[in-house]
Length: 545
Image 1 (cartoon, helix red, strand yellow):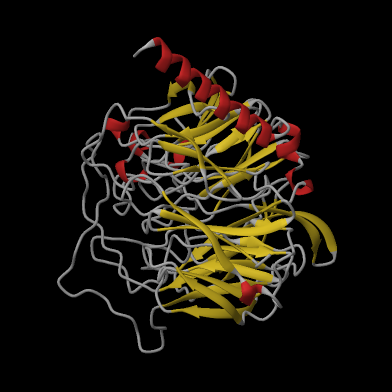
Image 2 (spheres, helix red, strand yellow; image 1 turned 60 degrees about the vertical axis):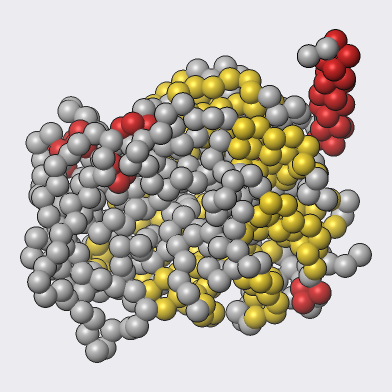
């Protein structure tokens, strides 16, 4: 490279850095992240805020004018895979992951790319599944992203240049990082995937400045630790319990709320015994400074259905049955909508939001009273609802402070659960799924498969309205807004706008892509936008000027 070209390259880098710095405005401090609801023009977290509500307080787009929404821009991201990402927007800059290993910064108003970071992974497990990345986190002038080879990377938000990289786990053992980290104070909190491989789950905290690990909490307790006696023999060593989806944070209680996935082997329960297999299929409350457990609540003990509990945990302060309560709301993959007291994990209520036939009710502590024959076995269960995909999954639900309702995408179907002995082999899937000659079928009084968007009343768990979708999806989520609109993604590739009060369809846009993501909203120069990833493209909408 000639000296002229080198100088020109340096000038361009400085120009881009200056452009980004000018657009960024204030540095993204922890205080801004904590109080992000005061900046509704920004979408600063994967769930929209620390509380996991996935709600936009913007109200320029209303149920009266949403039919006028128009596409403002779209950008095709590198790579051919369908995107599961949800962008962040801070001070007019959009940060998003593309294909795993790629992060981009764009002008949120126009979609113009500012910089692109691309990292080649160091190793690839030949048995890899779920090769996606769902998003990034931002603190200070750094963007944080996880990788499929289980590393966490810090990127300069002004230039797109790498700052530090830390290896979290060994991807050859089945570990990967597929979801957005969560920044809390001066730490980057990240969980791992790997439940299908029997890879023992954990949650890590890293120093945001240096990448040095501060603490690690294991979701499967070892010998002498609380809960280890819920595993037979040495089965805890391969107990899975991934913590792969982004959690929530209560700044007032100084508590991380995170969820834990399925036990290993996934379907075969023979080696794990009849114990609860803690802390799988649970919500856990942790001290963000030390990683110490405060409390836990298990949704599905001794799970043989792959009913990961890694769905969003929504933190809400509201009047509930005559008392002001600090609540944790959670629609679980097992088909039940839970309300917990998040100060101590106490069970308050559990209501099915789809048809389910595995649970007869709850004891006083909230433990499900499982119907005999509903869990996996070599002989096969009866035809159990919900199916292995679950009644909902990682797609975003939403809680509206205007209506007081919880919105979610659901899938209603059933299947038989048959187990077979599974031998653990590091780096390979550890499932234990079997077959029988005469599989069970649904009874005549049980529902046909269906899917849709529902509004639930947390006070009662009752379904307020139900908007049916033609095809089920366990990737597409919803977002309620202060304009009285619920935006919903669909497997058909439609972005749909519904009346938050009635569920009436108000508008839709066909992207033509395979949609596997959830919508988000932001504003630039007092103009509200709604964005969604579909196929390999991000689409951004607004009302006409």
